[in-house]
Image 1 (cartoon, rainbow, N blue to C red):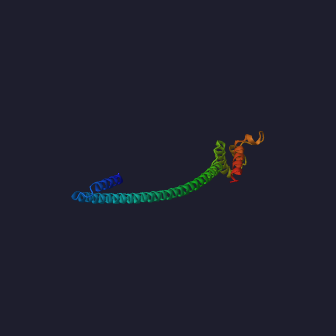
Image 2 (image 1 turned 45 degrees about the horizontal axis):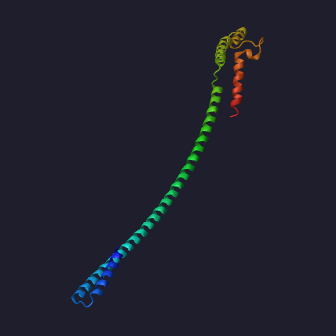
Image 3 (image 1 turned 45 degrees about the vertical axis):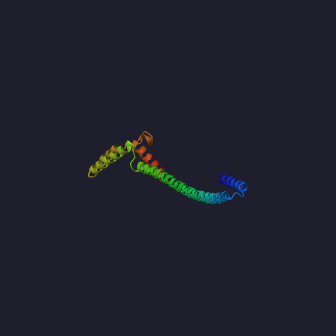
Length: 190
């Protein structure tokens, strides 16, 4: 647009100058107008050039800022990816440790239950046998001072029935002892 004005001004001044040659004072006016127009055109060209240079510099600055932002974004993304990978690895190791600890805890819990079963059997016959055994000890102590051996034999009857008629497992105390020894043999493997 500015270039068109400059072109028009040059054309107008040239035409005026050729038509009014030799016309005295009006030729001077035309020359003055021509100089003013040329000066305005030169100023417009300078302004256009200045704005063009400024726009170029701004474009270059935008490209630099965009490249810097992209590089910073890439570095940040890489740092985040590394941190995520490290965190995932740490979580995996911690999960493995937790699994190992849970397995060890389950094993120790099973061993504790076996040991409790061995030390404190839940079989009611075992308690009955222990009570009968204690009573027979009392009777034996009482009969110990007596010279008659029948009291000692009778005291044995309180503890256990004579295994003459039935099998070994008819006696509740004998079966409890057998069960306890089975638990002991299982617990001894741990």
